[in-house]
Length: 388
Image (cartoon, rainbow, N blue to C red):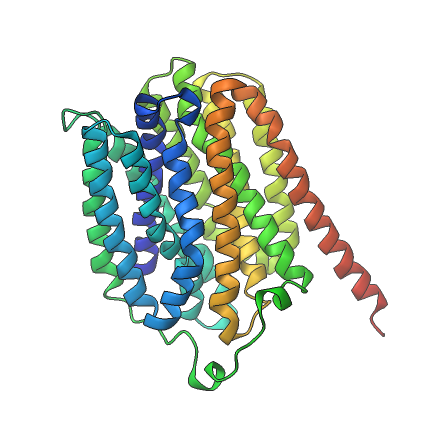
């Protein structure tokens, strides 16, 4: 439960960043298409930090490294507030890139959850910890709204509030007793390299599907505040859409683990792709507030099925001494994909518009569907060829 609360505070940070950074970036950026560059720097910094975080986790342990990440979160949020106050766009970009170290750490909460329970409950552990993101879905948009005008510079107060959010998470994570990452017997064996792990079809599909699902979600979510502002919707409506979206991301977590155990991981992930398609259909049907609400809600549930499914699938592909290596490979790929889509979203929504963005998102959706079909075909063929 403490880890789930830490996850909720992490997504409070993320949702506030999404709600605020695009709009602050739009005010400060030299060119309009650079508006989402601060958000791109955040996830790009996470991608660059993922392998470093994996080494730090292995060297210092889960709890100590998680606390390092939260200290970085406090400092970076403070620098963001200074950047907004001084109207310094590039300082804002640098501060959000620094916060990527926190993002790369907190992305491992779901894997740490598996280590706190029996193997038979790993799907539920992943789901329940990710369900902590519901807290972020409720608190994040409301925090951004409540602190928008606390300081003379709009949204600077939101960054200051995030310093206190990170401090609270630091206290909570300090109370969690994590088991050793690798037992001494396993530590003596180096395990397989990432290249060797990638020879497993399940390893490749787990990472590809999670990254593509996260990429599509991030592409549309990062652009939605700017798209809604272009449609003259008030900030309160933007906050409502983001709150609904994040709740849709995490509320299914209470039963996603059960669905995976009952129907299998691939059918659940395929359902995630179908929900992403439904999101595009809904988004293309209009640009009223409720169209944004409906599209982003379906996008959130689709992300949940793909991300939890991909994480669960990955946990079956590595040995204990390989976990930090495998987990870093997934998170580096996911965060790199998010960096590309964050940057692309700002450029696309300010040049091509909201509808063209949705049409473009069909390409990664088709890629995700293809890798799932490929793995399903391989498994079916292997079962048919098995003796007896």
